[in-house]
Length: 499
Image (cartoon, rainbow, N blue to C red; front, side, top):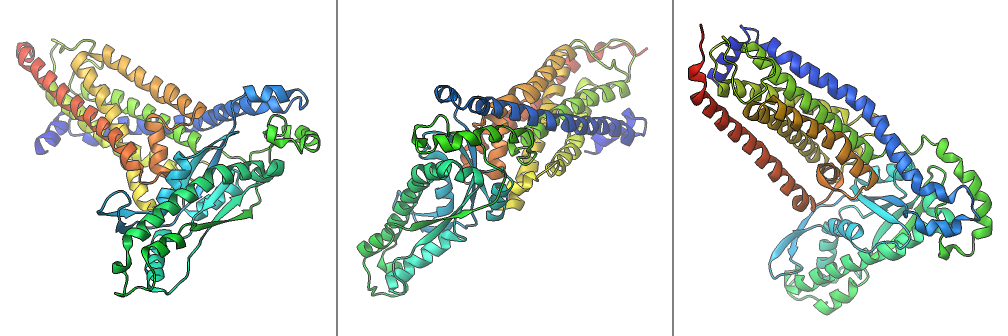
């Protein structure tokens, strides 16, 4: 490291701070400007995309009965509020022990289990307070609040039941229903409760029964338990009951009154309401910019900042070394220049990019609280750890993009590097954001960021491979480019005429 800083001081003629400062400041400015432009732009794109599916039911209530089935079914956000802690217990699928959270299992079942026939849903795991807030501001149509410390409570009740201290317990799930969920004869609420929540209840109840059976009398506090394993299985057969609470929120929109067969009783009473419901979309700033659009804007701006950092780092170091600002081919200029090997120059560029990635990532982390609702409000369990993981993941994305562009530019030439930079910009600001906004099915890095913010234990399965791939790309670019520039040094640098 001492040699690295000595070379940096020589390159910058003792003004290392100035050489580092202007590429970093420029990339930060590009990030802030891009974010301020992309946030409203992506919000508009998402709103227009969602309106395309919703508008056909508004103009002519009498004729849209046949048109509705041809449209894309609406997608509703469901907030799942959990506050739980995994506990050691007998493994459900083996004879070993395992750490398990029944709240995580319930959320996973809501997300991956049964679906409602007339609409799709996107579940997100949050704290109970954030889940309630999302229903109140219209971000989510429903919130499913699971009991606090559900897993420790279940394990304590199993022991207490074996000892005879308690009777068959029941755990209350609170469903917060917005005006939209209660609209049209509680259509959304009824379908989601009947098709999705009920299946999740049965699934987790079965898991609790298996654990209670495996737990056995011998694990209780007493040797002689008054209740058997069969008694415990029957006691935990139906572990949950559901309570529905109404929550005030934005005015509802009629999605189903004209096209859904199950809405037969209400066509005449709902038709007059369809006309007023068509006008609120122009009024409501109530449904604020969604989390999906905010994440897409943040990542796209970060990609633009990383590309700017790479390009300016290369130009700053080349200029300080007396090279051309842009080296067209993978060779070194034969004009008189300061005697620094290509590998040393590339190492300086990598150092500048690494130094700039940190403030750029920290700025991205800070900007996640702006504008509108806080992205951090959507964090699920262990929010402080998720914040650190989020910043680390953003740093990895930024550093990988910058290092790859620098590596390609120095190893293969600036033209190839410019092509890679253009491809990165196109992918990071057009392709991935559009795929995420038009089809929010969690694909690629954009989806993994959402998984990191609001996901559960499934994050290990889906996010770790992405991290491994990014690290592999980063290490390959570093080692490959250093090896290539070292080969150029051996072949060409000794032939440079310094006179």
